[in-house]
Length: 435
Picture 1 (cartoon, rainbow, N blue to C red):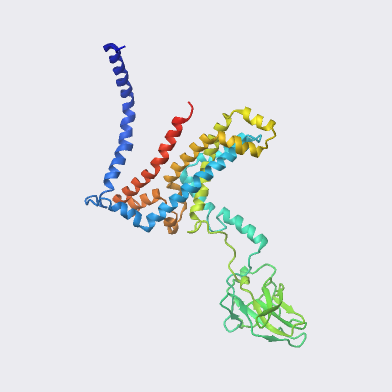
Picture 2: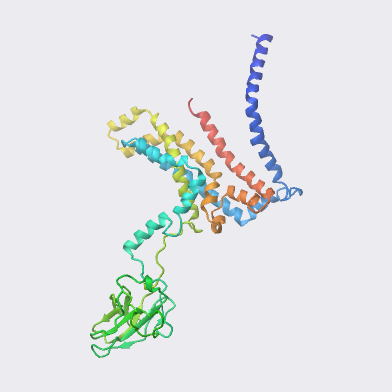
């Protein structure tokens, strides 16, 4: 049956009315999305000043510059690692919160980082990853654990006084060979050290020994510093011994005995009439300072860790919503058939949650492709290039000192081309999902 002019006019009015309501949104979409994209494509074909047409020259530069290639590599690492970890951790949290009484409180705690701005989160993690254990939480914990099993040296930076024992290239200190002297005589060896502040000595340090009764090779390790004077290489009144130093007795290059200095700095090797004394480099090594989280090797994994801390709560909430809509009959039937919780999780829960997990994963892929603020705030200046991603590189090239909007526009277009496939995949998933 042919449509009447009246019905055609009514349909036209409805479409015109719909277009009228859509016009503000379309105008904003065109002004803030379509126009910038089109202008970026055009601008990417011109040089830094915008006056010279270079064609695809900016794109060749984008793939020929080491910093841009590093940013592309880091972006690939982000896409390969961060979305999968966020989705997996969110899934584990969502499943666990169904098993515990305080699941609501746990969800609140995990989701809370989403309420913090990325700038504040970046500053927080910059402090968490600080190299100084007095400021960085992670290195404070790492140092505490390390020192529990391997106590820190007491005398970092100590060195022998010139004209005394020999400082070897490996950092150890060695004396000339000594032969035992008469019992109850003076110390066979004196090992004067400098490079330590007297106030930094341990509280158990006592005045350096001057008389060492007994037989065998023996001696004293002491701080050869006397305020106001003193004789170099000689134990002066008021100079204190260095307790807790490891001392080795050598027969040639072979260690035949090991001991530790007493509170007065003295050491003894009874029964050994001769030998050289060696103080290992570990006695004077710098104390353990933790892990260089923001160094070139670990800065990208460290920032990914901060990203996961922020977004795991988002993934948990989305997955928990999908988990709540799963048919419970299949889970109960599996339990009645004797399936364990791990089997139920792997063979029933995860397959039924696959559409939700796919949406979360693709959303995170799109998100990490545009990551900028966390990298900019957390990465220190010297390693910012090592941790750079495409979005950060785009900003640096265009506005952060490069002042080359042509190359920056080319990087922006490349970033858009990389994001579009993930966006299309996400849209298709939404359309296929049941309404």
